[in-house]
Length: 36
Image 1 (cartoon, rainbow, N blue to C red):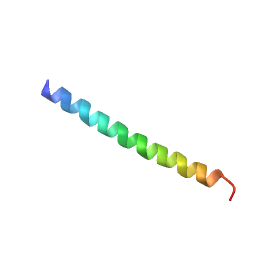
Image 2: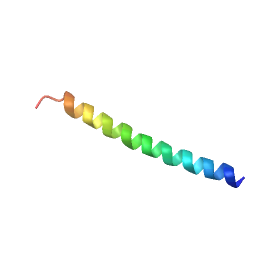
Image 3: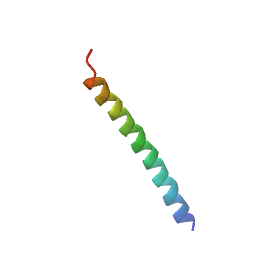
């Protein structure tokens, strides 16, 4: 049971980290695509 909870916590951490990276990447791509 304890293992399972730890696994979920880890998964959530990874997920939020991935979302952060993903949104940064999107912002960067948008920045590159906008004419200056």
